Image 1 (cartoon, rainbow, N blue to C red):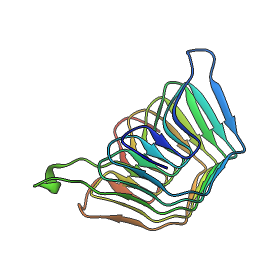
Image 2 (cartoon, rainbow, N blue to C red; image 1 turned 60 degrees about the vertical axis):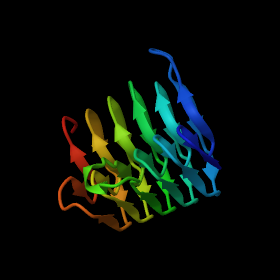
Image 3 (tube, rainbow, N blue to C red; image 1 turned 90 degrees about the vertical axis):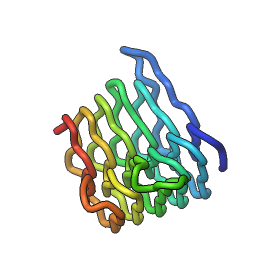
Length: 173
């Protein structure tokens, strides 16, 4: 699957409503995913008010910009990811004259997380980005990350905002 933004192996833009989360369970993506902009993921490119569970991404994922994850590029608004596995390799490369000024956000499960619970997931793929690089979550602005396992390598160019579980935490637990 290839596209610009909101590119996913199962669904590109997965949007529920407050109080009525959409559910996606037991899905598998085996195909390669390529995006040229933001919100690129193995299962969903972008997600809000959703529950994603027991799903697997086996495809490699690349984006020439930012916000990429093995399960979803970005997720927010009372959402959950539980019991999912990523085995694909993830690469977020920046394009431009000065890549050091570019922001990248890449995670083995989710690139960017807000008001979401990420629990009992496993990443086995290599995650590569300039910064905000995490084995499970690249950037956590709010929400909870617990009981996850990262077995993949985390590669980054910049020496800060990178971690084996969360790359950059600005307000989550």
